[in-house]
Length: 147
Image 1 (cartoon, rainbow, N blue to C red):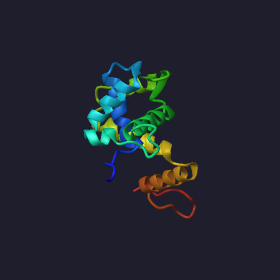
Image 2 (cartoon, rainbow, N blue to C red; image 1 turned 135 degrees about the vertical axis):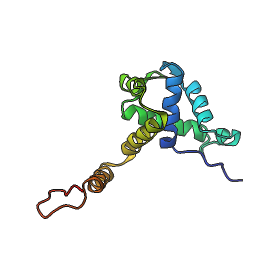
Image 3 (cartoon, rainbow, N blue to C red; image 1 turned 30 degrees about the horizontal axis):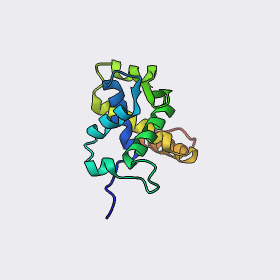
């Protein structure tokens, strides 16, 4: 029997952040965060129960744990004590602007955590690619041509 597919950590990041916000910003237990994130992702009972190959934890709990680490790396969430997390000042500020809609915030957070997952060489190549996309081809002197 094959394991059901569980979303990756970068896909858990927005639901984890959203759970922290909707549970008051923290401190919130990891169990509460995971439960809410699983609901936001519409995970099936089989996906929630699927164990990692080493049987140390469920795949969903492991990916949610990595998502919290990614959110910590980008400065949006932080641990308060073992098993308890909260939004950082930066994380709370993300939600204070009423002009921000959840789809834009989700895209922003997804971009942040994907960037945090890239190795240094990959990150610099990605930055160069994005700059080239925004500015167009370079002239002989290295000055970008803006279209």
